[in-house]
Length: 248
Length: 228
Image (cartoon, rainbow over all chains, first blue to last red; front, top):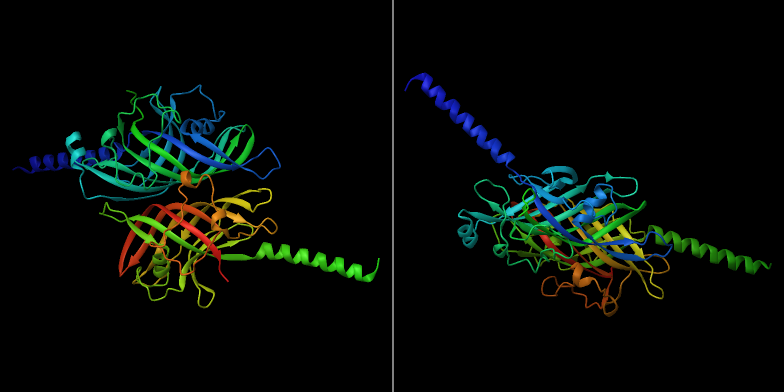
């Protein structure tokens, strides 16, 4: 084999490897549409009474506050919450994704830490359904709420600890959705993992595929109608679904 | 005004000041039992880490050691709820012998209930300390813990109440539950409890010389009576 030919093959191989690597890193991550049902507790702000109120919050409420709108605003149904996780499982972010233009509008919470363990057992049922291998990843992410919004309605800060499980495509390394009837786990009930009912957080698309489920504990610093308050989230559920870019 | 009356008023004032100062500076230690579900790399089966296992690791012993039953997990809280620590408390000497984790930024919410104790809801972000020995110990990590506590109506300090009175309508939904005796035994047959809590986190630990990252997707704590 001539030197030129070897050089060409080497260069092509290198380029291919680099391209694959870049692809693996960048494919990272179609953002996954994520619905939420959080239960907040907060001190009642407008009276002198020391009373703790229980406040339900969903992903639409969080998106509204982060974009400076009133918590119950319904004018922008295509601006939705989504979760991104890098394919090497080093970081997760909660973002606001605009489905009308297929673009990320803002980052609601950024990664502080991401830890995971993965099962060596390939789920044969899911592998058969997908035509590929598939693994369960259990993860715990700590996310820092980013200050965003307006003077009247905003998220000022806070931290969320998100503990959950998700399916991972062993070829790309990325988290991947599976048909929802296959997305079950022995420990879901024990760990309080459950889907978010439609009446608690509306998702325009039908629930056909799901990437995983997670539980949330944390605290949010919130401004709602000019009133600042600290909201403890003792519990909350996240349903991590399909790619946020697709509406079936 | 007679001098005896002045003396009485002065003494009353002094008592109020001393009580307030006591409430401000006093930190109380509560026996705490815990059950954490854990996962480690390469396994898809959850195992249980009890409060006693954490105390053992913090003291440099094997997690399942039973040689020091008097060294138990406890939670310390100041009366202003500004911080919290998970500690190993030696019941035989009535001293804290190790600090498992500190939370310097406790978020407390207070609800005053007429004719009852104050109710506290809190969120604590504990940083696990580097404690133990090279063979068995805790190397770091964090626990995010949310829960509820009782506090004295007069001085604001956390305090235990009879277990039959310690219930909350949100316990089930929030994942707060007591810890079974079979998981984390408590030698004291107490009928007192200060509150319940639950949480999630990550612990880096070394056990029998092997370092591991332990994921805790869910766990719960029962905060019981005050320690002497």
